Each structure stands twice: as structure tokens, then as C-alpha cells.
Image (cartoon, rainbow, N blue to C red; front, side):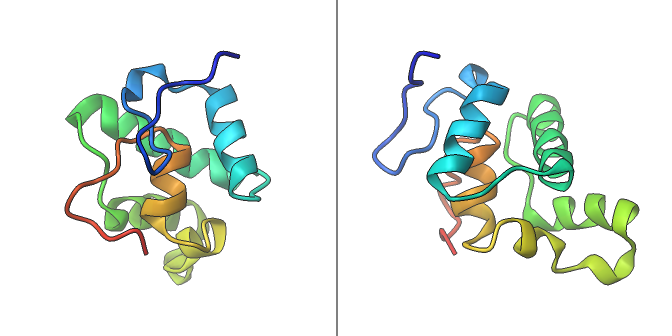
Length: 104
């Protein structure tokens, strides 16, 4: 795999260059072993991005995960990506760094 072009913070410059291999490499850098639940969130994020050309707000991903895990799963996204939705989930899913969001 050729290393994709990333910005100074490690986010993809062009989300279209994302692949499963890129996600796995980014997850490894974050010390995350991707599970079925991680992939569920990541694929939802990728589909949302394809449709809207913007990274989904965390509330959309929480709502998606709740359909699978129940309403008591509000914190599931933070269990999957403990160092933050933007810092880990958006990066691993190949989103550009959302400009107005904090990395927390």
C-alpha cells in the first residue's frame, strides 16, 4: 500500500483515497484493533460522506449505532474511539479534519 497524502495532523487530504488498508493503518497508529462495531461506524460514516460530501456529525453516528445496540448505547462511539470522535473515528474513516470541530 502506498502511503496516502495526509495533512500535518494525519488526516487524509483527499477522502477518495481511503481504503480498508488505510483505515487499518490509521487504527494501528491509534492503537485500535478494528472490530465489527468499529467497521459498522466507519462504513456508516463513509456512506454519509459519499451522500453529503461532509463528515457526519457525531450525533448521526450515535443514532446509527443505537439502531444496532439500543438506546442505552449513547456512549458506544466513545467506547470504540476513546480519544475522540474527530481525532480517531473521523481520521480512521478517512474524513478530512472537520475545521470547526475540536479534536476531543
